[in-house]
Length: 388
Image 1 (cartoon, rainbow, N blue to C red):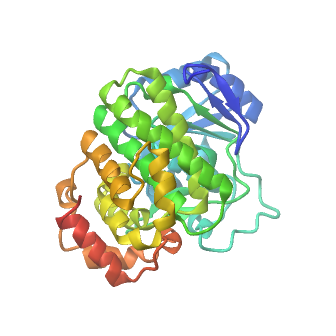
Image 2 (tube, rainbow, N blue to C red):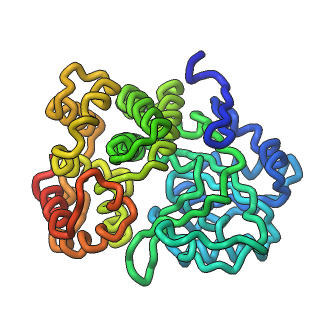
Image 3 (cartoon, rainbow, N blue to C red):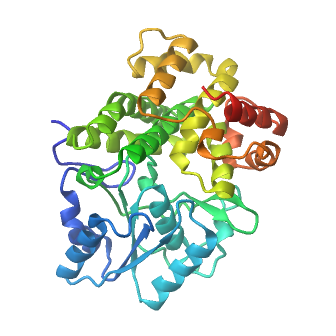
């Protein structure tokens, strides 16, 4: 079999894989218990052909779907509130979260709040989970990634910007699980070269950071290494040959695996990137990619036992830190990632403020090296001025 074939996997949620599988969306909605789904996507995806095609297929099957597309690249709490209001006023009974990380995060956040009166921030990851006894069940949820990067399709976790505090927080609930994740590589073929690179680099960061979390989780570690193998093998191909369907399929699979892996946790790249994105609305995968080299250098003393397996997964014969690090930087160069935070418009005077915020991010707590605000500030400054 190849990544051009149709496959179905049952772990960690039902995953429908293969070119053209989106054509069966109405069947999956019915199986999930939806008759009036709300399609949630981001502003950038709203006008793309796959959204109209999805709506048309649902209409033809007699499913009355509504569309909510007011989701920013870094989804905001006020956008989630507006989406919840549309879900209720439209009598919707399920959510189809479609897009890159922003579209899927927006859809998942709306699903978390659509059928209850619980405040959005009560679902914050570091808090005790809300007691759902006596609450209406969460609506059924289908996730459809349109980029190979975020890996957000198999869990309920979502990163949402708190507009009052200008910080990003992870929200979730264990009882919200996607009924289906649909991985259709045909949907990603039209992705621009830059977004292919940025989202693909995001998947690489997920795999690396998840594997380096200092805890034992063999299932996540296995997913991280296989995700890293697929992404580093196929990302340059997908960037240079965007119509290569097998490359697109392998990238979707690698991204999904890396997304499963970060159930174990993430690290300093994400802790910083979340807060930069909340303040400056930078593209998440791009920000991660620029930060990765500086964070790897910082974490190097505490990830010595992780380097050789990652290098081997990437096909690198030199399994030292320098060999692994050099290959990571070579891939970033190959796919056109800028070298510093300054190159992507992050101002030089924000390092101390971002560091204080990043220290509060849940990803900081699973970084392999213990952190202080001053340490994080130094990493940000290095990423701002030196980069890779």
